[in-house]
Amino acid sequence: MARYLLGRLLGLAGVLLATSFLVFSAVHLAPGDPVAFLLNGRPASPATVAALRAQYHLDDPFLTQYLKWLGGVLHGDFGRSVQFRQDVGALIGARLPGTLLLVGYAALLVAVGGVLLGVLAALRPGPLDRAVLIGTGVATATPPFVSAIALVSLFSVQLGWFPGPGSTGSGLGGRLYHLTLPAFALAVTLAGLLARVTRSAMLDELGREHVEVSRSRGVAGRSVVRRHVLRNALGPIVTVGGTMLAGLLVSTSIVETAFNVTGVGQLLVQSVSVKDFPVVQAVTLLVVAAFAAVNLAVDLLAPLIDPRLTLRRGAKGGTA
Image (cartoon, rainbow, N blue to C red; front, side, top):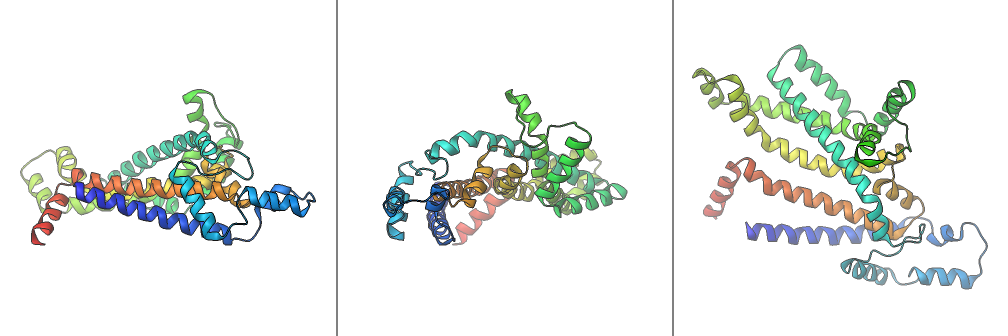
């Protein structure tokens, strides 16, 4: 396990290094000049332009710029934002709690709604199963920004049950209330996908021989479902669910912009539009790191959920 964990951590470091270089290259190759945003259309002398470019190291060779930025990142310095004129680390740190709260809220909705609908569809074939399949099919085909528009139009504008975009609440309860519509918009597509994965995994386990034997011996139906069906189906559910959790971080940029939620996703969209190099690079690196960390956590949890995975790895190791 220690060797496996070390290998995964080294792989994570390699992924982050490659991602940092690709993002740094893509941002610098994009059209536009940050100096033009800093000047905001005001006339400036060549000396002023040169001073601004020197301040943000824009005149250095590309590889020199990258190495300077990478060295700062390794020391916890992500640079200074072009548009906000603040330290990037402090800027992200101020917005990160709101994004994490939104992602956590949406993840809870995805986990509860997706697993519950999938289990019900697998255990209740017929009209309920068909209704879940149709509903989840519509959900998986609905982009988050479409869900955002529909939710605001119905529950905010027409019914007035929830506040509209741009509003915030005080305290944990107030903030959760104001994040309800954004969380649902973020969760709809992934909840539908997780429900389908859960249904498929449950149906696969329901058809196994040991389940039929348990039923023929008179074991209670709930006990069979809990101990033999749902438990064995958790492997693919957790694996796909972990990937979805990482995907929520990517989708936050759309939802936070649509609902005017002050978070890291909205900050990324704002920074891309003005070529704020340090912020775009830092946020992208943060998302990739979170994605890789979630995948690592899922891989480590998988043998605990399904011990057969440990046995398979051990058999492969013994054979080798």
